[in-house]
Length: 137
Image 1 (tube, helix red, strand yellow):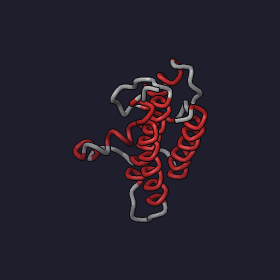
Image 2: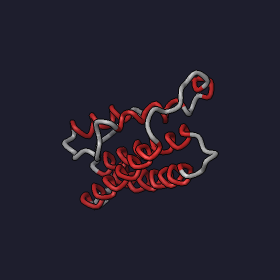
Image 3: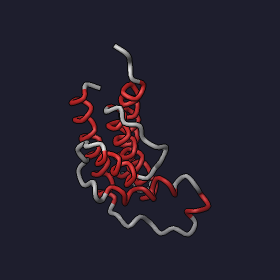
Image 4: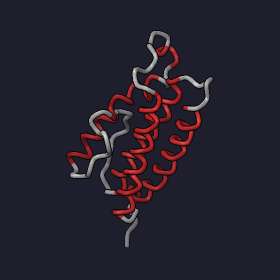
């Protein structure tokens, strides 16, 4: 049996998504943590979870932080969508803007409640774990 590098990558991505989810949840209860940093880790967890599922199905995905583009790829590939897929793209700016300090200077706080942000991370990881189990990845 020939190994598929994408399928092997799925487990690594899901592990990294779990790390981001842990950071997201931990920071969400820290009064000194900004909503931006919580959102950044939630966005990363969602992005990596989706990429893990795509990889487990041997679907090549682009190097992007755009959750909407990744969800579109799930749809095109006939892969079941994560919970609240229509709203997950709202997290994209949190992952992209955090990378560029100068762009944050004029940005308002995230308009999403922190508990909503945290729950999207957890729900998407749970979805990804189910998908990976179904593929045997």
